[in-house]
Image (cartoon, rainbow, N blue to C red; front, side, top):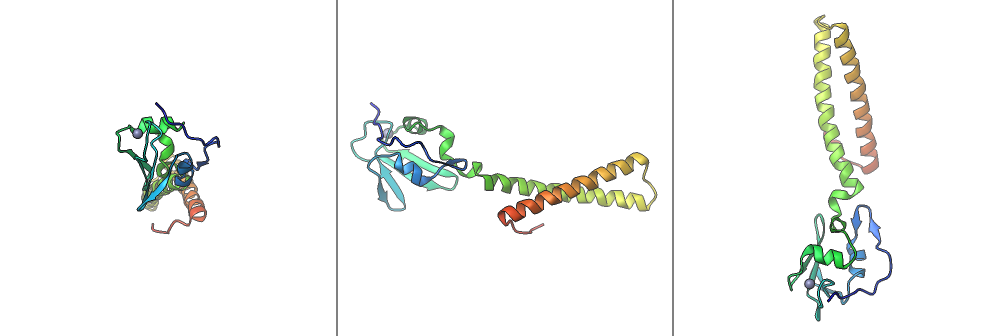
Amino acid sequence: MRAHTNNPKPIEEAEGGITLEAFLLLLDKVQKHGPNYLARCPAHDDGRPSLRVAQGERGILVNCYAGCSYNEIVKALGLRPQDLFTDALTEKSRDEYRYRAVLREIQKLEITVWQCEHDMKQGRMTESDMEYYREKIQELINRRNERDDLRRKHGFPKND
Ligand SMILES: [Zn+2]
């Protein structure tokens, strides 16, 4: 038998996932238990709180002492399995991955451009080499702009 929660409010979705506060509102008999929480498990007829809820690094961690699976628990709450994972989905962490990738691209482009300029000084540039060079310069400018935009947006440290 599925215990139902008496929370008719729509799930408040944070950017990329539900917050711990919003998640706790979906549960019954929530009590603080050290740094974590205990609540009635929504996936089985739970007489006493046997669902442990904790804030993990990448989202909300749930564990039913009676043995309900993660999928059973989120489904009983009307959530999708991915809804408890916040970290990988937040805009800031997406941008952080992008930022690191952009830094790597900038490094590669700088080497390429430097090599082209070296060849140019040696007089070894053909017309198609020049075209390639101009393309790479443009790409480098674009990536640097993207890097600066991400820095301004999130205050990422200048570590390149
Ligand atoms: Zn359970």
